[in-house]
Amino acid sequence: MEKFEKLTGIAAPMPLVNIDTDMIIPKVFLKSIARTGFGKNLFDEMRYNRDGTEIADFVLNKPQYRSSEILVAGDNFGCGSSREHAPWAIADFGIKCVVSTSFADIFFNNCFKNGILPIVLPQEQVDLLMKDAEKGENARMTVDLEAQEITTSDGEVISFEVDAFKKQCLLEGLDDIGQTLQKQSSVDSYETKMAQERPWV
Image (tube, rainbow, N blue to C red):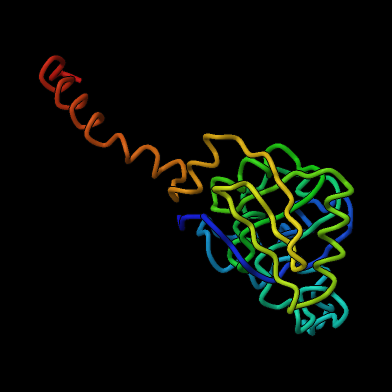
């Protein structure tokens, strides 16, 4: 997993509330357990017509937002079923940070495990960031995880809270497997000891 330290990028405004995981990645695409290849189907039913052509007025189809790395979203983002494919699709598209007033718990935790920083802010601050994102590709935001700050294109600084352990995992680029591998020597020692003490197991 890539480290998340400081990100400066285009922010896409998506003020819809209750965006659920089936809207993020429809169930028809859940045919693989690989983490890649889902970005092209992110928000599929909102991005494409039935014939596969793009819906021009969907935010991520607009030229100024095609390279967005930050998503400013409406309330209760990631609700619905607990599919891990949802953060996989977001990450595969290239979005590394999602800002909202609230997230579904499972989706929120899955984001950290997949290198995405979900940030919870009060409505007035999300509104401010939404307006900044609406300026387009020239209005780039900076998200500094170490300092726990978002800086708007106008230089306004907004502080955010994040769990210390989850923050450290993102800073070090550690998912669940990476955390386990940090204990590799202890695991090896334990297995060697058990093989000696209980060779019949």
